[in-house]
Amino acid sequence: MSTSRNRAGGSAQEAAGAANGQSEAAVQADALGDASDEAIPALSGAERLKRAERIVQNHTLVSAGTGLIPAPGVDILANLAVQLTMLQRLSKLYGVPYSENLGKAAVISLASSIGGPGAALTIAASMVKIVPFFGTLAGGLSVPATFGAFTFAVGKVFTQHFESGGTFLDFRASAYRDYFREMFGRGQAVVQEEKAAQDPEKTASDKTAPSPGTA
Image (cartoon, rainbow, N blue to C red; front, side, top):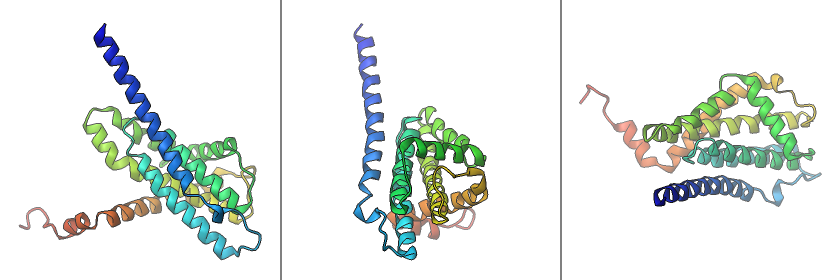
């Protein structure tokens, strides 16, 4: 009986920890917004675009952080929360009507239409964490880049869509398939560059380390 209680207690603690990871990601993403992200009638096009890029960049980095959540599936939900917060900020900046349902529908339609670096890749990257130790290790290395790149691409697609006067109601994911894939690749580079900037000593040692067979 005591063993069953201990297992139940452990499961409850793991679930609570995972939920906390999801809520903390949402809080971090929410903290990135401020009054300067609100739509301002007198804002120039160049300044508005600059602010949009800053919103996308900031949420990309938070999104990459959600990839470190060890619980598979929960990391996906945390990442979605970051993406929805980003879309809300961009909507406010461009004066586009927003609701959570509209945001979710837009992200899902985009993920399901692009193939390749879409929903399947995101889910697979998360599910690899199920494998004890090695799965968690591999997931911790690959998932942040995948999540960050996906969020970066979503942000870039909707920045372009809003810049052209579009809204969530007239968004067609298929029209941005190629652009999304291009931005996904660029997003991976953005995450890697940020990682290198945070750990310059490791990056320098990697560059100076001799190649196998040259020592």
